[in-house]
Length: 341
Image 1 (cartoon, one colour):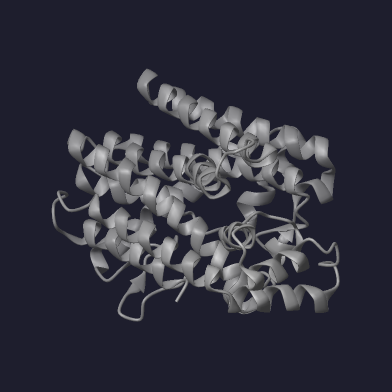
Image 2 (cartoon, rainbow, N blue to C red):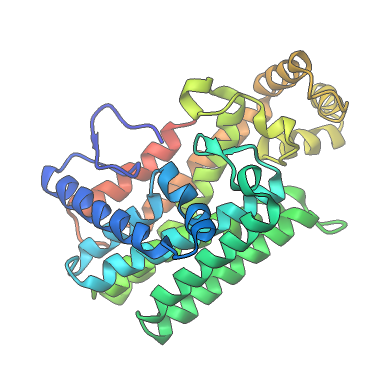
C-alpha cells in the first residue's frame, strides 16, 4: 500500500502514528486472523486445503482493518465487531477465487492461483464454500446484517457481470468503468466500515460516514492500481509494469486513451494501435505500449482522478469525533493518493 514517512503502520495498510491505536489494531487483527483460520477449516482434506490456500497466502487485510477502525467510534470490545471483520474478509477471499478463474490469473499474493493447483471447478466451488462460511457467520449478527451482506454480494456479482460484458452501445466507457469499480471493489470496503461502526454501537451518523468513506476510498484505491500498472517498478507493486495491459484489463488510462483517439488525438491513436496490435505478448512491444501510455497526458489525468476520489473520501469524515481513529482514516486516504505520486 505504501506508507507516509511521517507515520508508522498498524498493519493492513492503514497507518497510524498513535501507539495505543496501533497496538489495539494489531491485537484485533491477530484475533481476526485466528478466527479466519477457524472459519475456513474443513474436515474434508481437499476442501480444507483449497479453502486455506489464500488465507495462508496472507494479504493486507484492509477490509477487516476498516471494520476495526470503524468500531473505534463506539465500543470496539463488542464481540460482534470481530465477527463482522471475519465476514467481510471471508467474502473478499471468496470473490478472489472466482475473479482468478474469470481472469485466468496465474498467481495471487505470490502463490499459484487456486485454479492452477486444483482446476477451475474446485476453485469456483471453494469460493462458493467461503461465501457459505461468511453467510453462516453473518447470520449470527442478525437480520439487518444478513440483508446488508446480501446487498453487498449482489453488487459484487453485478460489478463482475458488467465488467465482463462491457458498456452498452452508446454508454460512456469511463462512466461504466467507475460504476464497475463502485460495485466490484468499493461496495465491500463500504460494508466493512459500516459493520465496524454499527456493531460497536456508534451513532447512525458515524455509520453513514463510514459507508460514504468506504465507497470513495475503494474506488480511489483501484484507480491508483490502474496508474501503478504503468508507472511502478516490480518491487513497488508486486507485478510487472503492463500486466493489466497484457491481460486486456480496461484500466482508466486505457479507456481515456481510447476516448482521446476517438476524438482525433493522433498520439492516443498510436497508443491504441499498439494496444490492439495483438502483440502485447512480446515483451518489447509491451514495453513500448507502457512507455507510450506513461508519456501521454491520459496517465496524468488518471492519476488526478485517483487523487480526487481519495480526497473526496476524507470529506465524509469531517463530522466524526476527532481522535486517532479519524486521523488514521484520513491518513489512509492520503496514502492511497500518495501511491500514484
